[in-house]
Length: 101
Image 1: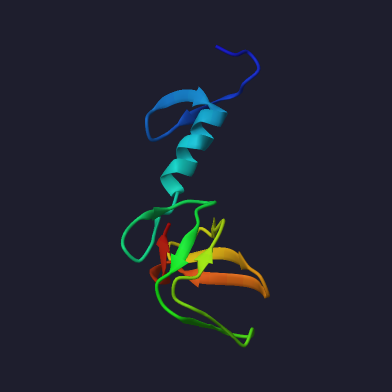
Image 2 (image 1 turned 180 degrees about the horizontal axis):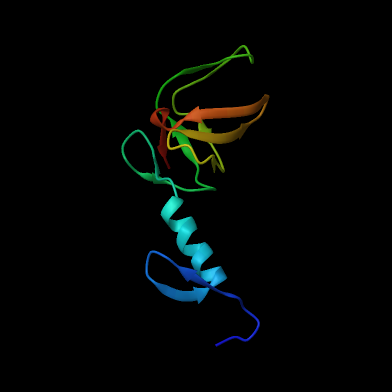
């Protein structure tokens, strides 16, 4: 038992627990599952492949089917993923149009 850590009361379990443990438990409960076009679970840092040609609004560019997008980031929305691609700033893709590599 650590003397430095604050303990808080967890109303769900009716127990006292370290504040860091309760915060981790609440984060796990609020986590959103993001799944690709075929049902694979996506995570931060995954590489994905496009399953459809996509016209990128504002960039005047079309990303072709099969294009690899490296190192995605989850946004907290179950259908949107944040990506980087050369020549396109602020690219957000819908999870239904990608497949995990």
